[in-house]
Image (cartoon, rainbow, N blue to C red; front, side, top):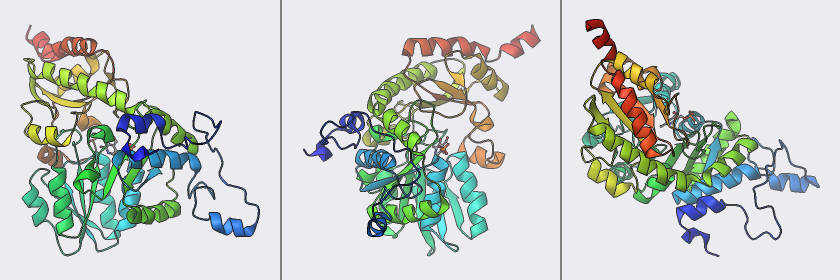
Length: 399
Ligand SMILES: Cc1ncc(COP(=O)(O)O)c(C=O)c1O
């Protein structure tokens, strides 16, 4: 059977398990083992480097998770890691060395910003940050020692959309590796490899896992790059536990239905917020008011589950709204079935200096929503009541 031709919903629901095996378990077995027995030393040498040698090198349960993500992204191979940050740091450390240079967009996840700006310089790798959607700046920042073009789309928490085709071809023209953090996009809504991206990264903690019970990361791409990253992952020891891989595979079975519902809910929430008197601005890729709306609709099949907005008031007002919500739980992270809310300047971007945050457009008034799979009416009613908190304290003082 030609499984490559299956649609994304089919690929995730069936995973990459061996479906031809007679009387095999329908659910994926967990190979909860650190090591694998061999019959003799010739076999020992043969299995070195396979997924049945030692679990820091690989594990059959992890392989199923990896093959599922590779199939979803339409690339040769993928690797799992103990976290999304583990995927980013291990990949970059595998492919770059002291003296190399990175061009990265300004608004990237706070942890990524910290790694690029504070950690890599210690090893002699410098990063130039450029305005996310100013592609001339990306090109101008390229130097003879540049090795990597790093982007994130949609961005966290400003929900800007990057032209994937433009970035991938810019990287090709200059002989650079292109890497995208596609966590917010999900492989259901966008597949960067179709535009020529070399490496696609996900914090599997978010949409891939989907149930707020797992920390993991994935990188997918061409075989020769993945092989280099595997060698580094094995040395650094940044692998995923087989039980966590099993949870990831189980989570991914419903990825397509979850994301489809989250796309619908988030669009409705964004439309509601946009017409609300106490909301200054809403950031959502499929709103007509979004500056890259046409691009988003061309390269994404859904706008995703992430919405951010700025209240027409102060940072205090934003905090009060986030605390008044009943169905959106105040917590960092995103992508699960339950709706969550957070204030980016107090969570994901806490470690980013204020001046840099201002350049990114991350304000104190900004609230980020991860819209779940609940009933959209209920979510909107919750936002309606919570937004009454904007200006409420000031009114009390005046009164
Ligand atoms: C866009 C994005 N990339 C990467 C990460 C890091 O992932 P993890 O927390 O799994 O290390 C996050 C975490 O919030 C994120 O939002």
